Image 1: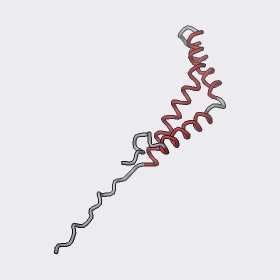
Image 2: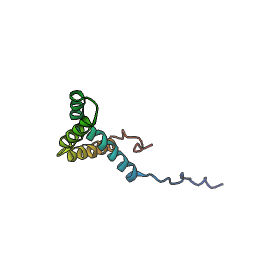
Image 3: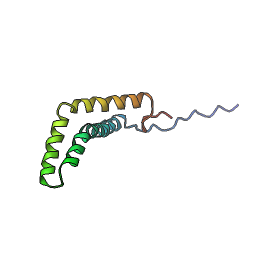
Image 4: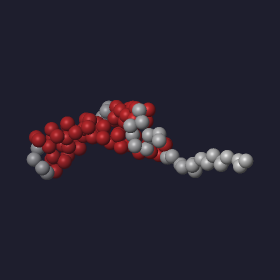
Length: 96
């Protein structure tokens, strides 16, 4: 009798879990930060005509709108990535 064929496992492939998670966190952070600052920037855009005054006012409005909300944007991005990994909805974190 011949012996059964050895059970061959596919070669191990690296999975850049940490790197991909960091990329997702930064991506969601910028999306949430922009979403928190966008209303103030739109208000400046509607009130002032284009020019140096509008740019200066937009910088002040963005700084004031972002102060105190950067931490919130980071927590939201971290929570989004954790939920995406847990529910396996984010590309790169789905198990085959």
